[in-house]
Image 1 (cartoon, protein in one colour):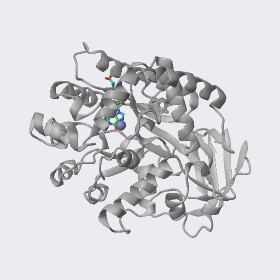
Image 2 (cartoon, protein in one colour):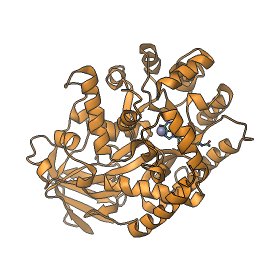
Image 3 (cartoon, rainbow, N blue to C red):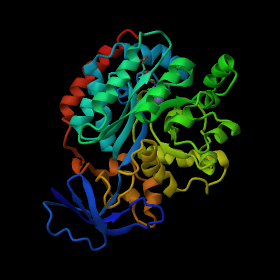
Image 4 (cartoon, protein in one colour):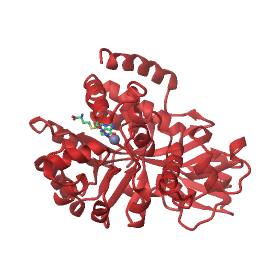
Length: 430
Ligand SMILES: N[C@@H](CCSC[C@H]1O[C@@H](n2cnc3c(=O)[nH]cnc32)[C@H](O)[C@@H]1O)C(=O)O
Ligand SMILES: [Zn+2]
């Protein structure tokens, strides 16, 4: 199957490459060629790009997709309270089918706002994998591991099961990671086991880190170190590629410890803002050469999953924090939501830029909108003016998932019917 995108404004997100008007030739799941005079006369389908901007799809580097069922269920609470009193009891009521439909709800929202790939940490991951398989997105899936009580190894064996069954599945769209949940839910012994397993299977680790001040105090009281030192002393950064979600509360020394790590930080500015967690030292981490990508966190905390909002919030927060508008320019903030996130998921050789040979994961943004005209600077418009609802077309692995804002792989009527009845049951009595 050959697809041509004709005469779009192309922003490849390759460092140093200026936007230009041109064609994109896609064959099966890959971009074959793109440029000003690429021949697309012999393709099976032509997508008109005039009036649209083609860019790599966003990569949401930290998600708990089924938490979309808990959107707006319990807001304006402190994180630990919110988790213990609301989220965990609600999650205990979720059936495998709830997880399937909840993650499909998240995927509908992600596709509608231009996200093509996400990193997900949750439970019942086989259900999420099935949903990813049928919807057509790309995802890196992780069974979140909380080791607060002895469960006879159940959680770890579920994590291993996910890796064995689903790594490389769905035409290679599904990859997996190992997910010790956080320093405050993972004591040293089980944490070491997860690292050893990740190392033996060459799997990346996905973990929450230093999200709140309470966490910093908890870890200091228990182990006499910072959360980052706790992970570093256990050897995590020497032995695995690590995706650190949040990393809000880092000392200078913590940042030095992260210098040179494989992986990096998934910054979740909207979730941090809404939960009042603090402002992550993104600019300082970037100065130290640490990779920083972007995520939303689950809709239970972030409320929405729109990566355009996330890009904007990331840029604004650093500018405000440093009192300096030159910090984190538009192009870099956009790069964090695409290529930098791809690096965190170990997928940068396949996605994150529009490049010949890479997977065809791309979006078309409709520029025929008052807030997106005139086009003095496309990166500024995308970072500071566009929103998810401006996305017209979404392609993953060469397959169209949305065109003309119609979802092609999700039945939305059925989805909302399922979501309504399931959400009501899950939160009853909590
Ligand atoms: N509770 C499960 C582990 C699930 S992993 C993913 C967990 O992360 C939780 N979570 C969601 N958002 C956040 C956050 O911002 N910080 C910490 N945990 C979160 C979410 O509620 C979910 O329980 C078990 O015991 O096996
Ligand atoms: Zn999270």
